[in-house]
Image 1 (cartoon, one colour):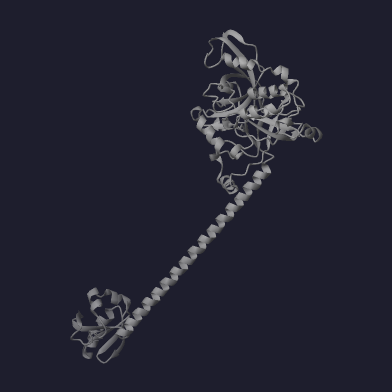
Image 2: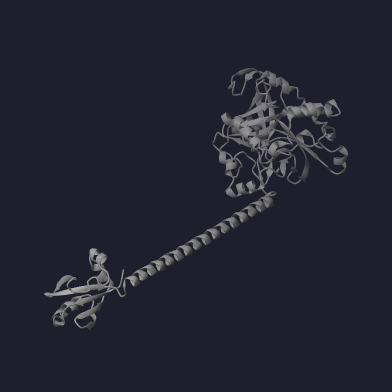
Length: 478
C-alpha cells in the first residue's frame, strides 16, 4: 500500500471557507502552495477509498481539477489529486524492492525454521539412541549380576490342552535357551546307540529302567491356594496347561475289584488297578487339587508313540508329601490299564537302587573316564526330561556347585521349559537321594515370551538369539 500525498485543489479565495472541512478530515494540511493545500495521507485514508478508484488511480492522473473526482465538503467543491511520493518507475522499484525484501525475509525465516527443526530432530534422535544404549547396557549388566540371585521355574505353559501339540512344537523350534537343541539326545537314539556301549547288562538295565520311569506330567489346573509369590500365581483359577517331568517310584502290588479313582472309572469298581508314586517339583504339582487334574504319560519316547499306542497314561490322585522349601512333591497315582500296570510292575527299583553308586559311565562316550571324576572330584549329571512337552530327551553335563547347607545342587546340564521335576542322575548317589530339577538361575525360560519388556526384547535382538545361553541350573536333594 503506497503512502502517497493528497492534494486538495481549490481556489485560494475559497480556502478559508473550507478550513472547517479540512479540520474535520483525519489529516491536516502540511503546507500551502498558491491555490493548493498539501496534506500527508495516512494509510487509513488510502484504505478508505473505493477499490475501483485505488486501482484506476496513477501518478498525476487527476492533476487538474476538471478531471478529478468531485466531492462536496461544506457546500464547496474540492478536487482531490492522488499521487505517490515518487514517479511510476520509482513506485515500481519501490514495490519490487519491497517484494524482494519481503521474499528475502520470508526465505530467511523459512531457512531459520528448517534449521531449527533439523536441530530438534537430531537432538531427539541422539537422546533416544543414548537412552536405548543405556537401557540395553543396564539390562545386560542387571541380568548378569542377578543371574546368581534370582531363579525361575522351567515349566512349559500352554493355552489349553487343545493347543498343546502346536504350542509344544512351536516352543521347541523357537527355543531361546537352547536353539536347535543340539545337546539333547532323543530317548530312542540313546537306547539304540549309547546303551549298548555300557559294560554290563546291569548298567544297561539300570539306565533303561531310569528312562522308562521318566514321565511327562500335564496339569490342567492351577490352585487358588498357591501364594502370591508363587511362580504360577498369575495362572491361579485358569485352565492354562503346564507341562513338567517326573519319575515313577514305588509301584504297589495290584488291587482287585476295588473302586478306581481314575477319571475313566470315576469311583467305579475296576477289575484290577495299580497305585504308584511320582517324584516331581512342587511348582509343577502344588497340592491334591492339582494332582487330580494331572495326567501322567509313560513311554513317550518319540513322535510315533502316540499313533502306535505305545504311550500309556495314568492319573494323579493326591499329594502324599511335599517340601515347599526344597520344591519337592511326592504324588500318588493310579491306573487300571493292565498293560501299563504290568510293565511298571517289572521296573524292579528295589533291586537296582542299592548298586547305583560309583558307576563308571565313561563307556557311554558322553563323559570323561571314571578316573577323572574320582581324582578331580568331577561329578557327571545326566537328566532325562520332556523339554517343551516333547518326547524324552537325555542331556549330559556336570555338577558345578554343591550347597550342602541348603542341599542344593547346581549343574550345567542343558534343560528347557518342561524339564521341571526331572531327576538329576549323579553316579555317586543312591536313587532316593537324587536331586529333582527345580529351575534355572536368572531368567524365565517359558513359552510366554510376550511378557518380556521392550528393553529385554531389544537386548535379545541385539544378541541375535543364536548363541546358546549359559546353563546355570539347579535342583534340591531329598
